[in-house]
Length: 361
Image (cartoon, rainbow, N blue to C red; front, side):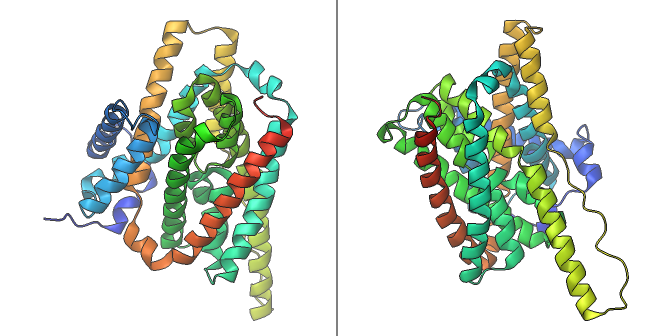
């Protein structure tokens, strides 16, 4: 019998998200951990190792939800916790792999490439989605998710636009599906690209959607590729704050103009724009600083890195479990087409810029 999926299961309250010790989180945490472990084991099989355990975890999550008709309501809170808090905690712990001296050594090319990508991808995807007849807010959410940092960008921008829950879900699903497709494509194309490992990591970090997607694409090709992917991707994620602020101000001004046009006597504005800082970037940099100073013994640092990979894989499984194909089929066809074309442009532009700037050698 197919289990019934309830949409409200994927909208946990703040209390649900914060109370990590509550028994209600355990079923979802167990499910994502099981899928993460399965992804790790499948990654050891011949032919699947090129995908890496992180990509396999999200694919298993998507397959589970689609084939079983959803997930149990009791697992929803734990799945949401895995795909948000655990994913970001894993990224924080992954900072133990990186020396801050590498950031200085990377030079201004990293910032330049990421800034160009964000500045061009958002308006292009929005314009193309509008030409295809997609909803404006859905298009902007998808554009931000594609250009900056996937579902994290969708979640940060959504309140600024006062987007409906289904618009947020479709945008997040679109970005998750596109990111997974491109992650798989990157891992298969890598031997043909004639890029050094660090340059490939820079390409993945500057163009793939989620932090976890960049990690998944770079991980099979060694530590040098992975470290560069992390560095470049987190620089790109840092652009979420100014992007969210600018979009929030634009949306606020647009709404105020519309309200004034409808009723000149309607006082007040849309309120103060609030932007949530990406705390996991600060945590990542803090852990990198600790590693740079050599405070933590090497064995402990290695253990924290292992834990980071487990948490990130659980987060990837949670993202896969959160993809609602039914809602996507109803609302997301046109915006998916725009996101797909935008992602292709981003990949091609990123490849050219990595070559132009000589990033990664």
